[in-house]
Image (cartoon, rainbow, N blue to C red; front, side):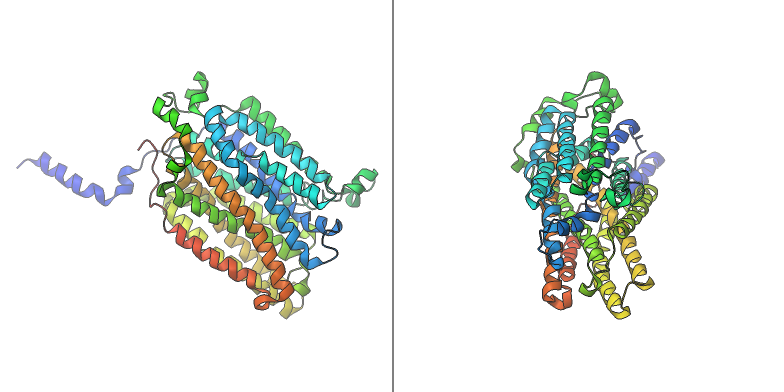
Amino acid sequence: MDTSNSHEIIVNEITPLFPAEASKKPKTPLPKRQLGILMMLQLVEPIASTSILPYINQLISELGITGGNDAAVGYYAGIIESLFFVAQALTVLRWTRLSDRIGRKPVLVIGLSGACISMLCFGLSRTFWSLVISRCMCGFLNGNAGVMKTMVGELTDSSNMAQAFALFPIVWCIGGFIGYVRLPFMGGIFARPQDHWPALFANPFWGKFPYFLPCAVAACWFVLALLMMTIFSEETLSTRRRPMASATLGDSSGESLPQQSMAYTPLKSLLTPTVVVPIANYAMLASLDVAFGALLPLFLSTPTYLGGLGFTPSSIGSWLAFFGVMDGVFQALFFAKIVDRLGPKRLFCMSVSCFPSVIVMFPIMSWLVSAREGVDHAVKFTLLCQLVLMIIWGMAFGTVFMFITASAPTNTVLGAIHGLGQTSASMARAVGPVLATSLFAVSKERNLLAGNAVYIVLFILAGALIWLGSQLPDEIQDRNE
């Protein structure tokens, strides 16, 4: 008997039983310098969006937009928060497709410059329409989110993608912390600085524009990020890359002519189930996440007689900053390890399954406040449990970015794929705040379902996301596989 043949038969029969073990390859080292620059750029994005949240409701009230109706603040806050995503949804695909042709860096320069100018305009706004124009300007000129995810996809493969995309929620949390926290950054205490430091900010300008300082500090971050990117970052698009940069980025072969021509491929041909399913998950995930992000500060600031917690802007900033710190630490320490242990799909499904419980805790806190006639330790403990569940929920973003990146057939359409994802997410994010805050206002004004109609709608949408997650592919592979 030929023992070598029998051994070969045994190996061939056993190997398929352990596909993960057989296909697992050593991790490629991350390009730390390039990723560090990208994370610096990513850091300024949440600063711009989250720094307005602790005081946006108070700003709307002070401008007299609602005519003194506190319950209607949610309508206008939702509109202001959604306008950025509406404008971004209309243009982000064009920016990412443009980056497939002219390179990633030129598009990032335009996006950072536009965001900087729009933040300054927002701080100088004294009417509802000036707030509208400044937020729309930021969205129209900003395609950075899709382009940065594209660059991460070009810098990584399936072995180290989880480590790279884990950095996005970490940096977002850090940016949120900087935007929300009271001391010594931008959130509650930088708003209305003449109240905190009357001697230093005695000029009448600060009385006329009490919310300009946090916007100006955010604009300085954009300037710093623009300088860092211009001087130190390398182009990642292979057809626009300098020869010496190829070795640095781990790809010296370049793209073939057929691959280069795919940069001009009609979008319709890219809308395959492999691409559409991850994008649909990202859109629903983004919609629910931004709905919660708009609903939480509104719930915290709403007076207790309307079912909220009646927190001050500084208290809201402290709670959100605490959540940002804990979320960032957890993502940094455990995300990549959990992905390796559970797999991207299982982790995504586990994360999104937490959202129904998150929503249920809102009416529980309202009931506790009414039953105990105020906010006590039981209410704060429930709020803490809600934030812990949101940390688990946050891991879904890193995994869905991995699925979207892996769905692109070549790098030359990776920008278009992420552009489609970002467009869908921006449209969803445009609907999310308006849906959440408006439903909250209607629920409280008309006492729909005892004021809980908004929570029931979000609960149903969370169930739809859980089903969408089950449609994702079981494994992630590199495009060259």
